[in-house]
Image (cartoon, rainbow, N blue to C red; front, side):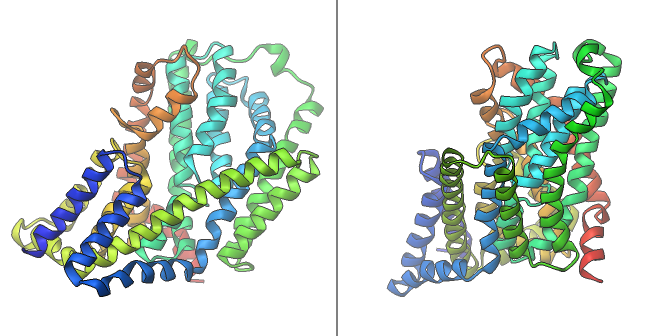
Length: 440
């Protein structure tokens, strides 16, 4: 049997197992171990063990549970609620101001968590009911919450970029810095769209009433204190890392410690908050570690049979495609897979194939990590089975139907596609900041 056929069989077997409802890491791990035993004999049982030791020896992996913990303790202690109250008052006088404030809230939550699920939960439980009560159009604000929450996998400290760095063997610090400007650019594009849309159709985003809007200046300034805590946490966590004072792992420990101190200072650190935070942190961290372990094992077998070189020969030699045509094909494949899989599943399935190919084609793997993440954001919101669509359906109030959710994402997907094209055409949007920091 040719190596190309073996590669096809491995992929098809893995996808078939996923369709039966198996967990992602179980499907990938089983196929990789079974293929290794069939191809290389009993000695191949060492491959998953080697992958495990490689995983546990990867020092930056310590950032994963620390950042997840930081995000959940800020959420569980109610600091995110205070933050939304601040945005509510300061942006309430603008047409669509609460929607703009929600995007701002999502950016801050993303900078403190790194997961889209946390942003979705906070947006759906805090911002969405408040905007509905204020007479905002339910379709528009449903799209706002979904689009804003997707920023969690791009704005540092993105957990997805940590996973990409592990699999692609790229510095996580560079990836975070590369995602910062595109993430803020996308948030700015969302805000511009909301302001223009509400200017044209004012009934979609009415202002809050004058009584709430015209608070004394002293009260408004007091509300700004809600933003000081997240800013200080982000500064101590990311600022110290950018200035070279702390390492990547040390900065994650600083962030987790600062978040705990903030919850304690506000007298919200109790046993219930800690129990819920630790339970969620452990569950998410273990899920990611199993997925990374399975991906490393699968990648070792896949690379061992020469599948990467075979695909490279197919695209470049036989099909005579240009590097940019190959890149666009890869991005389109992510969009298709994103209709059925989440970002981690997509990454571990195709990263062993795509990342070496990206390097061979002459593209920067750090830049490609940002492209992958933006494409995942789009795929998250693409019907029929986009991950964020069903998260929203599970969390949204009954008056928001699945068809409302599908309709709500159309303009935001177009905005995200524009952002993707901009980063592809102008790579320095992603690469300028890491080059400035790492070349000092």
